[in-house]
Image 1 (cartoon, rainbow, N blue to C red):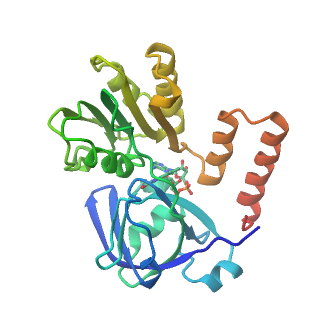
Image 2: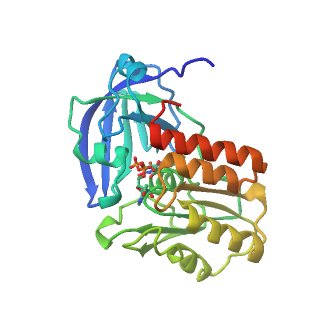
Length: 280
Ligand SMILES: Cc1cc2nc3c(=O)[nH]c(=O)nc-3n(C[C@H](O)[C@H](O)[C@H](O)COP(=O)(O)OP(=O)(O)OC[C@H]3O[C@@H](n4cnc5c(N)ncnc54)[C@H](O)[C@@H]3O)c2cc1C
């Protein structure tokens, strides 16, 4: 298999934009050919087991590492600056959130990607966007690119009142903030808010990114009770309560309906990655 083409990127700035959201801005020569207009798409960042960064192409060959998925919140060709918003999850912080919480200008890290954008269909009659703090960066990218005459709702779950952000939205789109200080443990906060919305006329485009259990409940409601069809929805879990990203990936594949023998193999692979910290 060809080796991924990683970029070495350097922290230019790291700022807590709200109590539980750290915005890290990266720059560096390797971003000179980074494509524009990939906001809402994802990159993969490489971390060591202990929560440090894998900082060079040599280190990735030598050290055990963990890949973590993050959204491109912004990219500017002027200065080749790439912004990523990391939600901090307190005592549950894994390698990525631990690193983001303490990184400083000059630190370097390896990055793969970008992967495709996750944008709504702007021709829909109206829009419903929902997400927790892991989905907020991509949700905000979506809101910022909606047409001026867009109608609809954004329902955003954050850990505290102070984690609300100023996001530019068209006049016809209202933002409802849902406070949940135990994301994942209380998985119905977003669903309850979505169920309370007044459904508008016409066909909506629905965009949802949040915790796995919450996503499953919302998906069941949208498909079974609201009849949303597959081509009018992006719905994805971005993390799972009490599971690392490696374990969550296995659960996602099972949820997608992989054949049982493949599921067993994925389960074994994830266990090996966790126990032995294998590279792939
Ligand atoms: C396409 C995509 C885009 C994403 N974009 C972003 C983004 O821009 N910003 C962002 O913050 N996250 C984003 N995520 C989610 C992020 O990849 C996961 O939260 C990841 O697990 C964090 O890695 P970690 O090393 O901190 O924790 P892990 O080692 O993966 O997990 C350690 C523990 O932390 C818990 N945990 C993980 N994430 C959260 C969370 N968000 N809240 C509470 N507990 C958590 C796990 O349940 C586990 O118990 C995205 C995910 C996907 C699939």
